[in-house]
Amino acid sequence: MTMKQIYIFSLVLFVSGTQTFAEDAPHLQVGAASKVINNQIGSWVQGAGVPRTATKQRDDLEANGLYLSDGTTKLLLVSCDLVCLNSGHVVTIREAMAEATGIPPRNILITCTHTHGGPSLVKTNYLMPIDHAYLNRLEDWLVELATQAVQSARPGKIGWGKGETQIGFNRRLCWADGTHTMHGDASRKDFSGLEGPDDPQHLAIFAADSNGKLIAVLHHNTTHPTIFYAAGIYSADFPGEARKILREELGNIPVLYLNGAQGDIAIDDMLNRRQESREEKLQRVARLVADETLRLYKDVTYHDHPMLEHRYDDLKVTVRLPDPDRLVEARKVLAQIDAGEKIRGMKMIMAFGAVHLQKVFGENPTDTLPIHAIRIGEVALVSQPCELFCQFGLDIKRRSPAPITAVVGLADGYGGYCPTIYGILGGGYSGQPIYWTRLESTAGYKIVESAGRMLNSLWRKPEKEVNK
Image 1 (cartoon, rainbow, N blue to C red):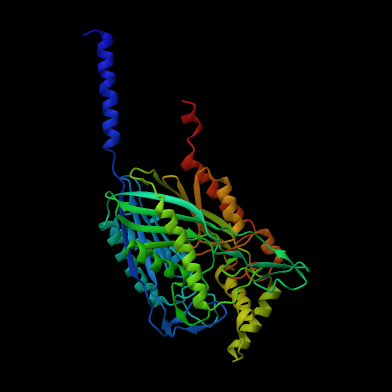
Image 2 (cartoon, rainbow, N blue to C red):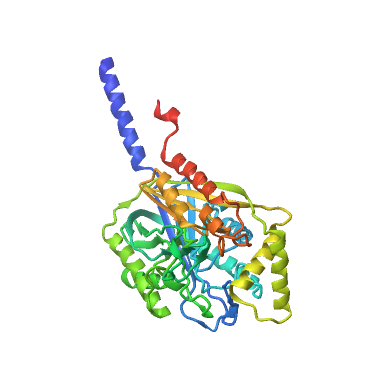
């Protein structure tokens, strides 16, 4: 055999070996699970200005989980029908889930849909306690969910699609005197416009086994699920109703709903008000969400070896504290409530929010925001723990090199509202410093920068690799 023949023979073996290696590469493993996470009737329902206990359960609250592993990266995404979870609670719960499953704890991402028809889990009302008994049960439920999702994992594939359906509208109204309010009558003569944009993008991810049988659905859109706000009813709101519609069409599978940058977004269109009942609104919005997901499902293309990668950044930010004079007035309001005066609504919210902010952060005005960037094939998920104003979500998408980018809120803890400079200048609820609007004025911009860096590290090779 000549040297040329030996070279050709060796090249064939090398190429063949490379092809065999690609074919033998670890197959994507997919698992999923659902868990009912209802609270006891008679317990508090999450609400800021309206302290009420639940008189009935309209529909089940659920936790739904999707587990993905490519042999190197293990990732568990969990969507809970809850308003939010404080960061300390999330750390405790995910550590227990990690111990039970072997998934790295920071690769477990617990998100909340932000339904206002769930139990009281964050202190936003002077008269309502956090339901710690429920949180203990929730930890057990989520450990079971994680275990079931991992144990159910089998070779599978992922498909995705991006569409559009508008279920959210900007809810910050600007007035001629320079003030801004959350909600308001846009027909007033002094109305000067909406403060910011909205985002109708709709994402759907479909997980199937290797035979094409659907395992789970994850979908994403942006708005506040507040249909049952102050109703004294436990409900998953429109994400739960959309889940019901999808299950009627696709089978009884886990369905995750991830909410977007919805800090200044509401279901109600401030410029074109609808006259409809709670149930009518619920059915209308749920149908919009489910129908768009079903439309994307018709054209889904699956990938059994998608790139699966994850980055996170614990972003340190400062906290804005209330002015001393405002604290004095706020404490007077709480003293009046203690004396029996029935002060409720925004006056109670703002007073308690200022006092509680000083109590929690007065000695150390700093906070940590966990920012995550996840690559699933050509889809980028950026998560952060805030009620991020919509403009920041759009900014993250503009800077993203991914074909599809979705910004997920209320994930891996709760950082409160994160307004733009306009929101802070305009003031009012979600603008003034209170416990759940506490972050420094540049926090949202820092979130955008952090997300942009991580997304580019997931999609773009380092210059030294490009120049090889």
